[in-house]
Every structure is written in structure tokens, then in C-alpha cells.
Image 1 (cartoon, one colour):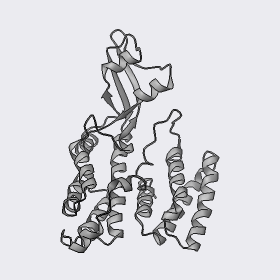
Image 2 (cartoon, helix red, strand yellow):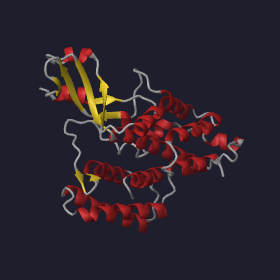
Image 3 (tube, helix red, strand yellow):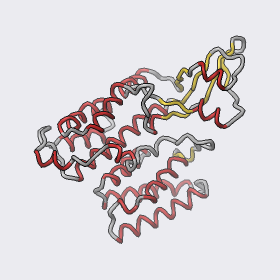
Amino acid sequence: MGIIQEIQEDLLNDNIKLSIILRKAYIPAVKLNLLDLKEWLDKETQGYSFYDELPQYRMIQGYCKALNPFYGWNVVNFHSKQAEQELSVVPYGKTIFEIEDMLDKTVYAEFQVQLTTDLIVKYGITGCNSLVNVFPRRKLANIISGAKSLLMAYIAKLEDVGIEGNNSNFTQAEKEKVRPMGIKQIFNVSGGNFMNQTATENSTQTQNNGLDIEQVKELYELISDNVTKLGLDEEKLSLLEAELQKLDIQIKSGFSDKSSIGPLLQSIKNILENAVGSAFGQGIIYSLKLLGF
């Protein structure tokens, strides 16, 4: 089995930690001279610096709490959307190793990030000695899911162009095939970002029947906007469009018929599994698996 297939199988195995898979991914990154991939792996395994632009899946939305010396910790009530957005959304640059360790060794329902004191002054938060952003545990799990989806799409792209890496070695022909590739291309089509809600003024998360409306909506839009990248034949395309139309109706109705959402997503996954070999399609299928389908 080639290293590319090994990595794909590892990514689909929930018993294998992402940190282990990232180490394995260094093999094609280094041997194929994939500089963008190696740079991304370095940041995920060594941490992002203060000056780095973080991927969307590492932008965590929580809520802001301030420490008052007399009344303790209190949720901050903002007077403007700009202030709320800047203080409620934080970049989270810890390594995948650290995130996995926190999830494995703690049972905390929430975590927090210390915010800089200059923000206290900037937004005129009075009677405050300390400021933190508090976010739910699942936000850390979402970072792992987002990174997994991105790597899955990238590795699938390597397989698409005929890269195998038998015995962890690559032929000269394989090395020639990957020259035009860059991981920034994958960022735009991987489907890895839909799992993490974009920070917007109106962003909310509503749970219905175990599914997040915003996640389902973003996945629907991702597929609808990129159907031409799936390479479906006319019959499969017609089936997919019919299911997407039904899903659109349910989304617009706010999941009024909760029992139909699961079968619709499962049907979409089945259509793609039986017809898709593209990197984009693999990313969509993996994203559906993360939702439990």
C-alpha cells in the first residue's frame, strides 16, 4: 500500500489521532517538495505565531467575560457589533498535539483565552481587571475536524493525479505531477471550513434533532455552488439536484420536518460515493461523515 492511501485510511479511522497522521503527512510533503503543505504541517504541529494568518477553522467564536474586583466574573454587554465581534471571536493557534491533550485529559465543558489589556482600554470596559474569551469544548473538536477535512482533500488531490508513494518512496514521474499544486488551492474547495461557523454579526447556532442548521446550510451552499467540480454524469447530477432542492426547502423552513433531514443528507452522500473520485467530492463526503452520515 502506498503512503497516500495509508494517510487516507488513517484519516477515516477515528481511533487514530490527527497528530500521528500529521507526522506521517510530512513524508509526501518533504519527498515531493510540497512547500505549502509542509508549511501548514509545521504550523499545525508547532503552533501558529501571533503574526500568522490562521485558517478559518481556527477562528473560535465564544463570549467575552470581564473580571470585576468586587463582583467577580461577568459577561460583557457590548454597545456595538464591532466590539462584540472583535472580542467574541479569537484566533486559536495552539498545536494539534496540545488540543488533543486538552480534550483527552480534561472534562471541562468550557475553555478560555486571555485577551490583551489594550482591548479593555480600546472599548472602554470599566471596572475590569482582566478579560477572557470563553468558548465551549466542541470548538476545540471542530479545529481537529477542520484540519482533518483539509488534509483529506489535499491527499485526495494527490491521488487524483496518480501519486501513490509505494513504500513511502516516489518516482520521478510522480514528482513531476505535483509541481503545479499548492495547498492554498485546496483551502478554497476542501469543504473543511463549513464545520466552523464564520464570525458574522448575526451568527447563531440552533440545534434541531442533533444537527446544526448553520452547518447544514453551509454544506448545502458549498455543494450547490460547486456541482460542476463533481464530474457527475447526467443521471447522477439530476438525482443530486433533486435532493438539494428538497434540502433547500427544509433549510428555508427551519427544519420543520426534522425526520427528513437525515435521509436527505444520507442520500446525497450515497450519490457522491457512487459517482465521485475528485478531491472536492472526497472533501464533501468526509464532511458528511463528520456530521454522522
